[in-house]
Length: 297
Image (spheres, one colour):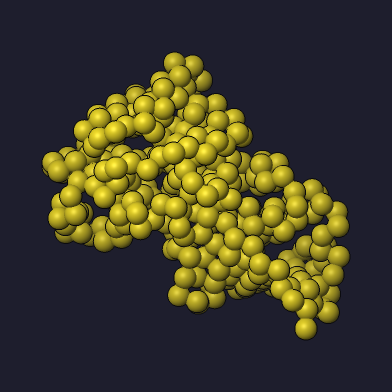
């Protein structure tokens, strides 16, 4: 019996610097307690089989590829063709891969629609196994700043800038008043990147984002944190021409502040307030809510 190799990658949230991180701004990135596992086992057959499991242990995706990484069959054509491209990009970085049969199984620990890094954890897992540069691999597949790939192998929050990730002591004393609420409006990261790229590069925007990242990282009390969060939302709003999420969706939430995370318009938002204030969101149908300590590594 051939023993399997196992790998693990953490999910991510981008707390500050969204959009601007693409142009070299400093961003505060949070690795999560939830992530994705991958198990790889050699087989005697002449193909690669792939199984992807959801948190409830249900298989949502299966596929088979020949050893040239061409799709043979799958239960879902769209992710199967996407994965084919990812595997071929990996092979280009390491020609010693896929020379014999393999069975690869992945195990997500969060809902794949939550935007917490199902793609970035996959890139990290495959890069770990193939022993290739994860940022180089990312550039050949999904693209982006790379902060999410940095989070995948991090053990604490990071300040990320231009492919360089530095651990930072971000452990706010008011974290019991920070929550993450899922908006159930899945964002495509590549679409968000493309929309931002259509706008002219703004050096002052990049500098302001870096400065706010530093200030937010060092905030000592909730009031200071909330003030900086609101400044951050306003500056990003002006740059991308979109209304901040609190004004747009939750104008009568008065128990704290709300901040978009990552690409604006979907996935999770950060919310401040006491636990009982979160009933406001539950009553509106937003029932997926995590406290900071439940989610952040």
